[in-house]
Image (cartoon, rainbow, N blue to C red):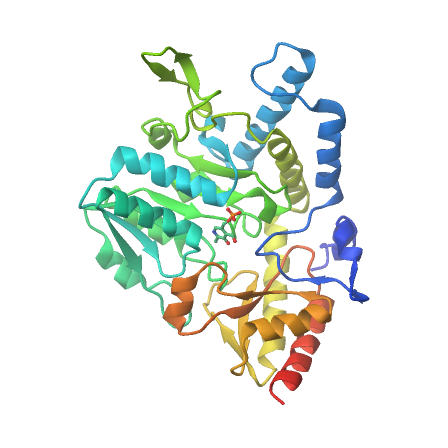
Length: 408
Ligand code: PLP
């Protein structure tokens, strides 16, 4: 891509200049967490040096400025996702908490014994266990959309699962283990045909593809700041106002109340009803810097660049005779999972680490998916907006070396 200045982008991330065991760092564990640009690092330091104060409750200058910055960040997220209202943006600790919030609060309001919740076979444990817990508590049933051997959802099977007992469909936009981009528009359309709301786990999507929640017509969307070049410990739940208003609060405490007496508490309006206690002020304000960073490059440009890189990497890896790709969906994003012969993924990961190459090995918090594919786990290289062709070439050389050592 001619106008994608990869060197300038890399210069924005100080950690990318690091050496590991005297080798240049090749960071390919972006699905787990991304590195941070200098602008986000500076925003954190700036917040504590110039703005630190509690929000929403102070009359004094600093508190008001911190509150303004906090609420400006909410607005920025609203524009980023194109949600109708800023109060549809709820700040949480991350994707996991966002999904747990919906399971707890939507579950309390809308799910009863005998009802059904649909997830898919490729979900992260974060989009599986909360629904399992809800179903166990309430006496509802969890239904699973099966996948094909390539790692695509079986949409015919999904159609057959839909009925009036289903109260929610919760699926990943993009699979963290396989990179499959799920046909979310079709899923939402089909579910809405039965008036069933849809939650998208966008933990692996929001940093790779432009998302417009109104265009998608999605009901809930969850993601984490730390996977989109922002701070750790902050995340977002987008929810349509019509659902959020009908859901009870998540936790009790300060901020989420309107009036408290010993006899009765009335709850605050959106979004504060779901934001009990002092929030992660630093996280919220600095997430805004991460959104600015993504907007400056442009998600459409990021998608094109990463897609070309994914194709380059896939072709290069397929040239290694002992390598088997795990996850070969037609629509994929930024994740390459693979195995080398019968070698345990961990052993490959250890050798790559000694070469300065950071990949992830194991089940990637998708144990049922690994069971379905009859493998213990994979080696996963996950790309980011700063990954280069040279990174991929070094990975390929590293894998060849690991294969020659482990298969000898
Ligand atoms: N969902 C998916 C698809 C993920 O990849 C992850 C993290 O890897 C999560 C949920 C959980 O995210 P977090 O740990 O930031 O809450």
